[in-house]
Image 1 (tube, rainbow, N blue to C red):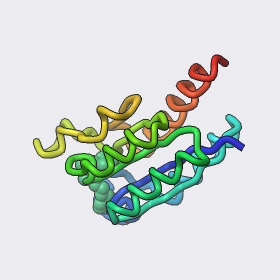
Image 2 (cartoon, protein in one colour):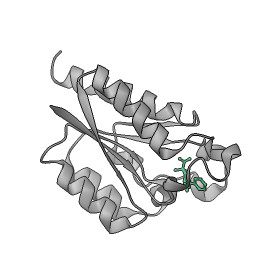
Image 3 (cartoon, helix red, strand yellow):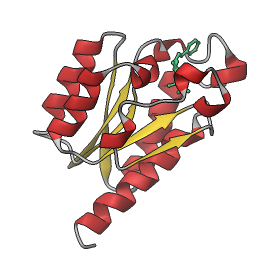
Image 4 (cartoon, helix red, strand yellow):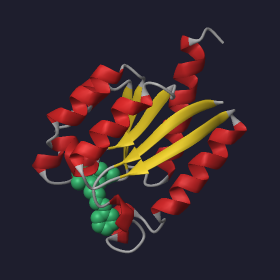
Amino acid sequence: MKQILLINGPNLALLGSREPGIYGVETLDQIVKAVSRHAEDAGFVIKHFQSDIEGELVRAIGESRHNCQGIIINPAAYTHTSVAIRDAISACGLPTVEVHLSNTYKREPFRHDSLTVPVCVGQIMGFGAYGYLLALEALINYLRKAAGE
Ligand code: CA2
């Protein structure tokens, strides 16, 4: 079965419990279930991993190259700081779509730069939880084109 790694970074386990005005009311579990349902319809299995720890995220990205076709990642705050996650995405070589719940350009200037997006296929932001489904669709479309389908 073709697998997609869905990765969520620090504090995203709090989704649905705080700051609904910025991040929405859906829980991470609801988001993962919705993405998994849509992926299944398209013939993919979602492998989800959330961590607040940079090194664990780096390891999960590295390990995914053995058994996944692509990655959807919300690196959360590490988007703006982590050379390690950027290097892991680049080194694993899997097509990766970056997703953000909020439109980071409407927020503080320190959120305007992403260290990770230059090594991704593309980025989706500002559409809340729906952005994860858009990211899935974009990644599957990319994978099918790359396979000549
Ligand atoms: O908009 C996004 O998806 C972010 O990646 C979310 C990160 C933030 O640091 C990025 O700049 C943009 C923060 C995730 C924190 O998630 C929370 C969820 C609920 C309550 C509090 C924090």
